[in-house]
Length: 126
Image 1 (tube, helix red, strand yellow):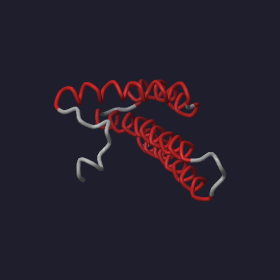
Image 2 (cartoon, one colour; image 1 turned 180 degrees about the horizontal axis):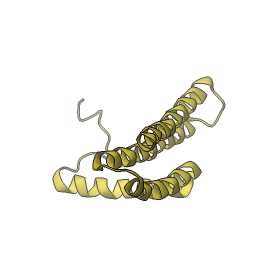
Image 3 (cartoon, helix red, strand yellow; image 1 turned 45 degrees about the horizontal axis):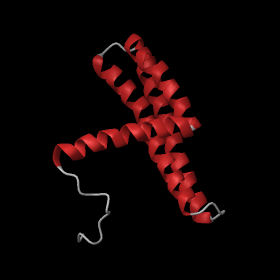
């Protein structure tokens, strides 16, 4: 990609880029917490489930897997929220493609949540 096609917001390199990226990420988490009910609910669920993983799992690998699938829900929810915000930024009118994008993002969150149920169930019932 030529320099003319790149975002004018790019340009920081090295440690300055990493430093800025950290604060952009924190801002993103704050924004998700403030504006996304589902993210808040799933975050509260994560705060409850992650300590339970330490109590309920027998092995370190089981704990790691139980925590990883819970964190995956948060990651997928953040991506879904970004998709929804982008679609809404483009247009608030009802459109089949906008609905499809939002529904597919929602489906990804559902699969991540079902993944938590399956992984936790397999570990706890084994």
